[in-house]
Structure formats: structure tokens, C-alpha cells
Image (cartoon, rainbow over all chains, first blue to last red; front, side):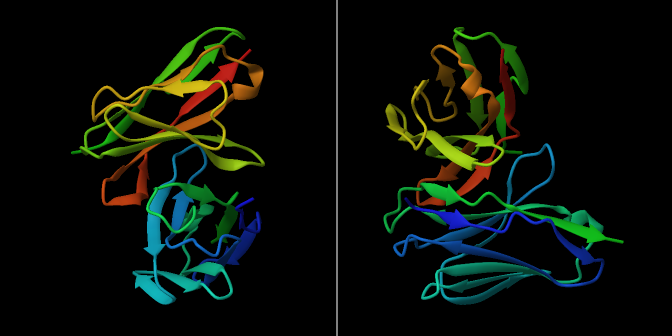
Length: 113
Length: 113
């Protein structure tokens, strides 16, 4: 069974702090990794993707990938109350370009003013 | 602006009835996907399509069907609705060459009584 694991939270951080969200996956063949943000009652919104080991930065967001450890993380710097949402980690199913994604159950982030 | 829409946004139906959920995208994306999202299970893939006349089963396809007669639309049909199919349904689409980078519609909340 291919799985993606996330701590459901809630993860609570004060405004201005760094929020660190983590995800582990079981399929060593996975090639692409995604972070989606989902506000309550809304649809998932793609915020970051990463394909290579290391860090990828986009504004306040940094995605980190370690394929050897099968670990993906998302750092949110200078967290804002508007960042409060559920963050979904998704990885591709296997190494082929099928487009099939496996999603974790998500981590709920609460940013307190 | 290009977009992906779903209709209806909310639907209540009775056990045994046939229900069709619509998904329409104007991005001219080749790939389209249907997911359901339930507490405790996250997002799970129901069916997907790589183009006109192409359909494939996902992880939880039993009781569902799709057809792709044009690029823009992938309707999801519940042949005989069951209470276990009460869920939030999301449609997503992606480009041919970036099948894993998916963009989601607003979702349909379906209740089967």
C-alpha cells in the first residue's frame, strides 16, 4: 500500500514565527512532490512543488525534499493568520508520468495573532 | 480567465437514484481527474482521463463511472447512489506534459439519504 503520512495537528504557531510541516512517503519510486493549501470548505490550492533533493523557495514558502529519507517538508516563514488552513502533501504514484497522486490526510495549521 | 467549474455545488439525493456531477474546464487540459474527500481518508482518486474517449479507474472506482466526449468535460455518474457515497467530490485537471501538476475545481458536496 502506497502511503503518505502527515501529522494531523493542529500545529499552532504565533504570528511571525516559522511553521514547519512534515510529510513522509512510502513509495521510493515517487518523483514529484506537491503541497496544497486547503481552507475550510474550499478546494485544494497548489502552492509548491519540488522534484529534486534540496530546497526550493517561493516567497515565504520553502519546500524541502530528501528522497533518501523519503521526507518532504514545507516551511512557512513569517506566518500570518491568513496561513491558517489544512496543508496537504501529495506525491506521485510510482515513477511513471501517470499523473496519479497520493495525498496525505493533511496537517491543520493555526497561526495565532 | 480560464477556469474549472463544478455543478451542482450541493446536492441531496436518495439511495438508489442515479446522480451525475459535472466538471468543466476551459484550460484546454488533456488530463482530468475525479477525487472524493472524506474525514479520515483524505483525497482519493475515483477515475481519470488522459483525453477524449480515454477513461481509467482509480483507487475507489466501484459504483462510479465517467465518460469523456470532449476536452472540456468529464462528468461523474453514480449509477445507484449509496449512503457510503456521501462525500465532497473534487474535479481536477492538468496539462498533457505535466500530468501531476493538478488544479482543482471548487467541489460538490453530495449527501445521499
